[in-house]
Image (cartoon, rainbow, N blue to C red; front, side, top):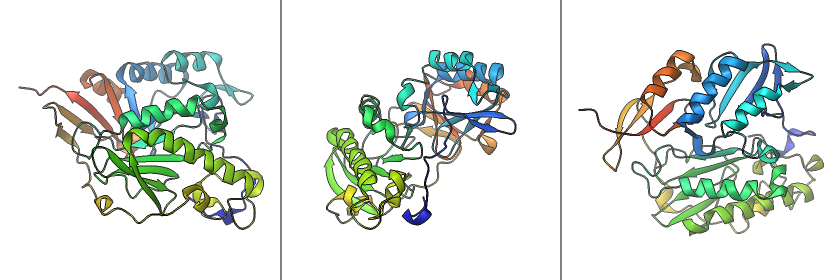
Length: 305
């Protein structure tokens, strides 16, 4: 994330289904996956969509989303048939908010370790965002990071977020260095939405100090003239319980707390080829999780004898 002196005078250009990026090999689109979670049925549909409309592969991003490349296009737009196929797969739940998509969650949250399961927080936050017309103005680069207390995402750059400190509480985060109050986890989605509104207000009015951001075009909290102080409000000391760091998630089987297993699969260069996708679909349960490390987690698998 860059500082507020970047001199930016335009909106971001991150690609979406309805706003593709036109590259040399065709159109590129990025799909929104909340917390990286992708139903296996939707993954199967995506592989068929890519085979029909794109280059056949799926590309995993460091923000736990998925891209398709080399799409046919006309006048800067992808085909209606492609949009219809993505919508039918359940991957365009809100045309107005499709670019407000970056919600990252500890990939093993609710399945192994961690202080709390933050998947419901991510889902509820997304519901609230999609129901709020004003929040469609958030940049496609705006990132919410939810670390379940294990510390696997605590070092990620972010705009808003939280880190669980117990089974019922989490400490708020605003920008790269701001730590807020400890709040009940069941209030976290609404609190994050309120902070997102504060960001939009600060972006319109100049961020509380210094020169106004050009036409409200700050993409990130840290780009506001006051570095996000007006969004954070009263700063708090970082809770001692957040000073943890998870070891890198190794590839292979991971024992879940419920007795089942998850498989962490490498995806070379983040490119899920048709051959690798076939292997994944044959092995996966009800969903797969795209990780921030451009790999795949296949959770909730029964142990093999």
